[in-house]
Image 1 (cartoon, rainbow, N blue to C red):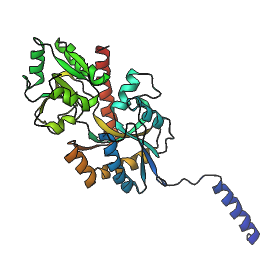
Image 2: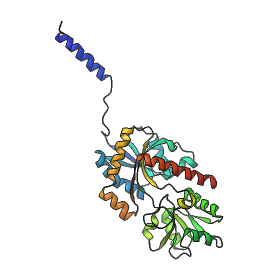
Image 3: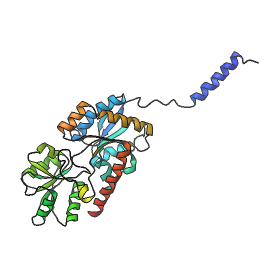
Image 4: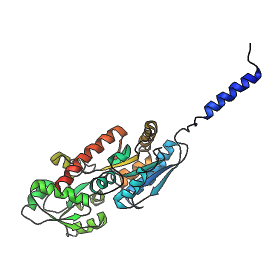
Length: 311
């Protein structure tokens, strides 16, 4: 017997009810993405983020809204993102330092496994620098000079202090840290002769005729000093240097892949490239999720070694 019109209606109703029992998943992204910057407005990272967010939004097809959450050396913003839903709509753009140093040395509400590392877009040009007319031209010469002369350095942060003292301990020399409020105070201290050398996160690039680079503190050589050896080459450690975008741990792989692809496309943006290369003197350097995750793990291992040996 053929099914009646009423029977077809019943079947359709049952089928509709069955489908309605499952939520219809919207394709990512279908709303604006929030990009948290864990530092005050006006710094190099926040400036990069605002320019990059426009290119990233174009690549994703939605607006990317930048919000600053300063505090705790980046820990406040990182904590907020670590606790956010793992859906790809809340991301963190930060120096990898803010993801590594606080959980390894402080009591914070996140750790290295609290994030999915999506991609790197550049790296800070960290170095040990000295005044252009200093009586040493390399890190080896600085160390030799320190064996017979009392030297001062700019003590800008707990992490940079640890690395400088780590090098001193490896070489059997001691130097005195002079408390200094960031690069803005380090520069006049160094150029004015109040200190003999300093760590620089990249500000030395603006003083090419007045400062010289003695050692790269990154894992690789610096864009502006390709012939200068690295701390990794001599001591097998390096400072966290990556500028990265991360998401909360557990973010779906397909969402991560979309953001990763959009990030790679956004690094080709003319405005972003001009800012990074010509103004900040940083390299445009895209590194994808898998390679970045491995690099972060290696960096963390070296950082732990420095922490252990400078307690």
